[in-house]
Length: 266
Image (cartoon, rainbow, N blue to C red; front, side, top):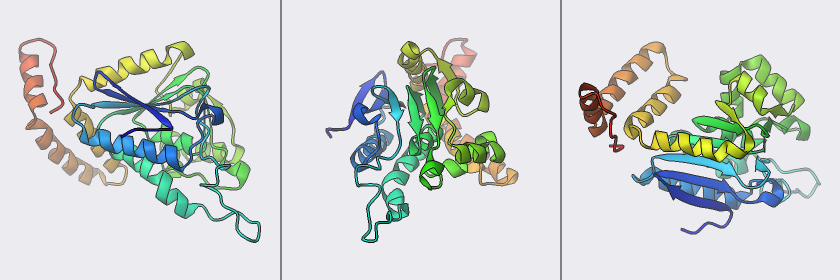
């Protein structure tokens, strides 16, 4: 499949998806959102892809939903904006679901401003590496809307309710170092080293035990809605699955032979 609004490259088992509307700070319209969702879903079925990086071209990661495109915000005859919930569920939620459900590591390489639902995309990724020029803002309160893209679920669990609600109310622009201190960014690096560091991390993950990574991702995300006892039961199930894998056999053999494991992602 050819893509028009994202750059799509694969190197060393790592898929790099780059939002490519730099003139709008990579604002997300229907097309770019659907192209990204399609690329991730295809990667889920491709055994050659074992890690994913999402980033943006130009100065921004993404400025959020493109309200000027007419896709996300339509005028009604009385001049009031149309409700956006159905559009959100149809276009943007599938992208968040694709990121959180794919059983391969997904890294956000945040190169600049990320706002609105772009904030949700960064939170949904398994890791976030940010340029020292990056900044995050919710912006929803500025336009009379509520957080979406899973932000209202993810952010309070990461940084606590009071701080999350404060960031929503104020629409404060959060620089990368503060985002790291709050806990929703894993690492901050010099801007010109962002992709080098991110790709080194992604390639390391892509050479790891992909099945075990995926099962762990599933277990941790499921555990957020489970009792401790249910989480323990899930661990047993996932460990049985992982333990029967080729990677587990290789890992044990490599340990006994005192050599690095050569994982195949199987």
